[in-house]
Image 1 (cartoon, rainbow, N blue to C red):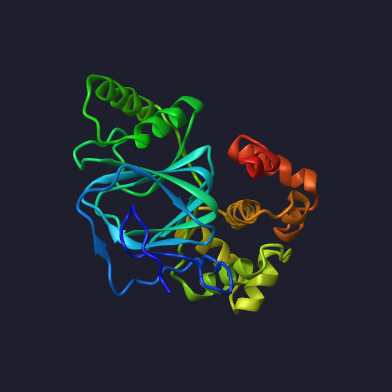
Image 2: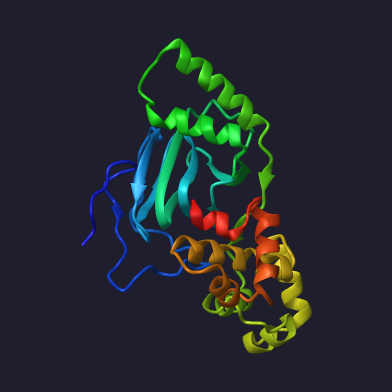
Length: 276
């Protein structure tokens, strides 16, 4: 049965009894979308696999995982972030959250006329140690209106303006041939087949699929596969799987190759991520 949570609204639910479901590359339009005019500013704890169902705000919102990993899904795809990243969700964007690991979710709402980065699409932002502490401080007690809080907000907005964007996303494919290939690798991220073999399995040509990856997903096939494997690696690490097992399950040739790719993408090692 769904369990009501405090925070984003009453449709946040716990995972089903058969364990966390896989996040797919496709995004189905929900039958009911909650409209919460004001985006909340608060801290919220979610259990592994717990979800906050599709909703939208009239405000912008920054979503940050103080622990665990948060995945945010829209019609355009799935964005995901560990502790060195935050997610910008623009006003009016329908989105849903999912927790991987025990998630300390920090939500920061901003009025629609306050857009320090000028972004109108969901975006992953790099989080410096200073920005992390500012987000934690701001979401800890958002209801006080004092000169100290106003100064904190000003510094926070300055840090957001300086925050670089990071390509940590799994876009949603539209072409059924491309979707079929994405499905195969979502089911088994360790699948080592090249694009030619996968194209044959999906009934398409290699060159056609290569063009589709660039046109629809904005990246090459190897770039997309790396993003997919990193997403699954974050999810598995958050759920407590050992680093060596994650490297194997996600298709890296060795544990050291996985550690190197993870560090280059997120700024720290998989072991440090697990300790968070």
